[in-house]
Image (cartoon, rainbow, N blue to C red; front, side, top):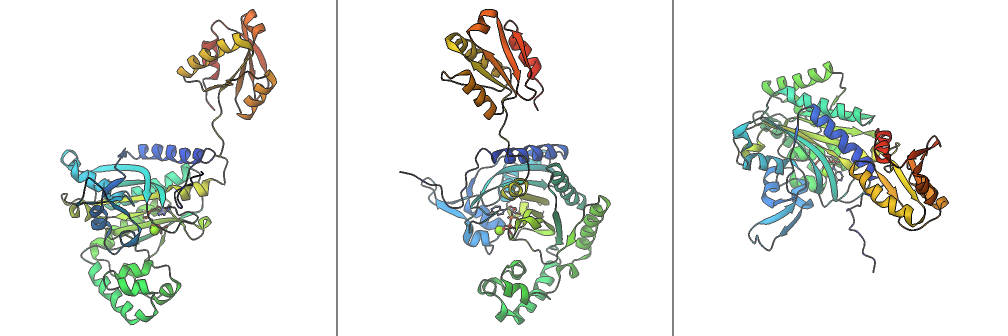
Length: 423
Ligand code: ATP
Ligand code: MG
């Protein structure tokens, strides 16, 4: 019986996984440079963590969460995390990280789960790399996060991404905008989709985020949040923009970009690519100054982002990263004595960090050489009765085709020395 995987839950196989590793490696590098520490949080959390922080009327909480009742936790419903920020903030509050040092720069990576319609660049289990800065309210750190992302995109060689920027204001100035927008929407309610008519009273900003053509059309001339920012929010947003300009990071203002989650305030952003089709956002985030307090911590500002791994992989997979790792050495053995020599030698070389491969069954020299070729081994060592008799082994450089005899005595040291530099 053949058992298949679930729709929206994909395998990441060798041949593709190398691109994932490349992205993860570069992300670690860049987080190191910007002084972020890694945090690892659970995949399962109490459902209320997400409904409280993301907001009851968000798409995620309304219909996309994988929620279940655990046998051991009869009263508490559990959910596979749909995003990382809520868990990171919960951990910050729960471990009282702020007691030791309130300012924390944290990054995470791992799978997230949302019951969405699977399509190109959209899975039900998908992977994010994200970062959160807690304890800093200044505009410099917003700009720093955006520079980090632009730096990261450059490191992985990603081109053609655009930064869209907006400010959602704060608890002081957003209510006035909300009323203005609501009045605007009420006049046009008959042209909105059913979903938007339903949620418009509770969450009018979300209508600007709707992808229905009728809603986009009906809200074309909607009032802009940027015209309603209070003095402090305007100042904050101006500094972010000025710092981006100073660092030559191009951006475009998008006052319709309200983001899908309730916790955002002030700076919000999305990096999009034209090469991705409908699912065009590769990274997104923003400021969430109220969230730590909402989740029971002391009032602490926060700002962060998450990148979608699948979409980064799609963008990079057009490039030359699909190569499987190349063994540094393939041991070709002939005869029982050859095998008896090769197996422990391979083990000792591996212990010293050399990647070694060898055949396990008796095969002809020619067939072993073909196998070494196929694996793209950089070098081959050939040992048979004749070589063992003479106390030598033949080393062949598979790229230059050069061959030389090496003495078996001291061979391992010699190989480690020669093969040291991994390409
Ligand atoms: P989108 O509008 O593309 O659905 P979003 O606003 O729901 O994105 P966020 O919650 O901000 O996304 O997550 C940040 C990033 O995670 C997105 O920009 C995207 O790259 C990625 N992402 C979100 N949902 C998915 C998914 N279902 N499959 C793959 N990647 C996803
Ligand atoms: Mg979404």
